[in-house]
Length: 289
Image (cartoon, rainbow, N blue to C red; front, side, top):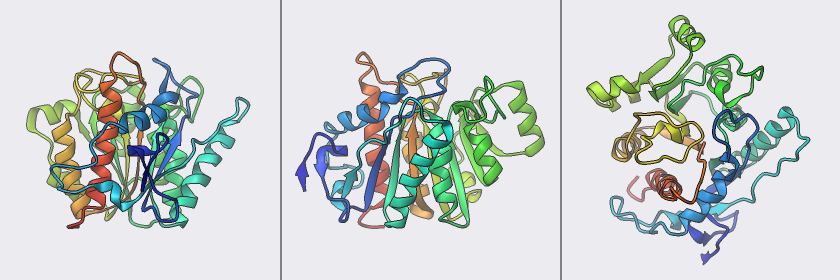
């Protein structure tokens, strides 16, 4: 493997040999607060150049499993929502056909719906683990059914096997939907009071799991550079503990990490995201299984 400034972790591996494929998706079309999430994928890849290749806790170098980074998906200014989503789904679908482990980097959270559809069509017995500050269960937002604020509603229409963690912001419409439909949600204030019930969470998840990770689910003290920051949130070690058991006990089939809004003041946010992604790759392909 050779070093490359355009590859995640800076280590080049050809597509055929790679087990992991990084898919940069700089989609930003429905941002409703702070703009800039289109720069998230490039910022994560740049920050990853400075993450140590050796993982102390795993006693391994996960990059040796082979990580290939695709060119960013290109979106033209006149692309319709359907056209943009088709590009995303098609790209993710191809990596699954090639038996790769896709890691999708966003971009705004709306991209998780077409990404999920590729997994929905490829796996049975599939759960979605949703980490976020926001419920994202609106039916539409500002007249847009495919807004970032509606992404979990669209996924819920395809699959009700969803567990959401860290939620601490939603509207009255979403509260009514939750009261009626009874999705599994671990609200942030409950986690603060009683801790993260990892064993119970895993008992509510199927064998195959897709992770959609909105970075505003993280405490903004640790990771402030997101499109819609909220007080409270999850910490590094809470999430690592969850992921350790999740990857050990379930078959994680792919993941997305979205809503980084990079800025030069809080550059540590980019690094946090890059290191967590590398940690998850290491847990997926740990040499001891």
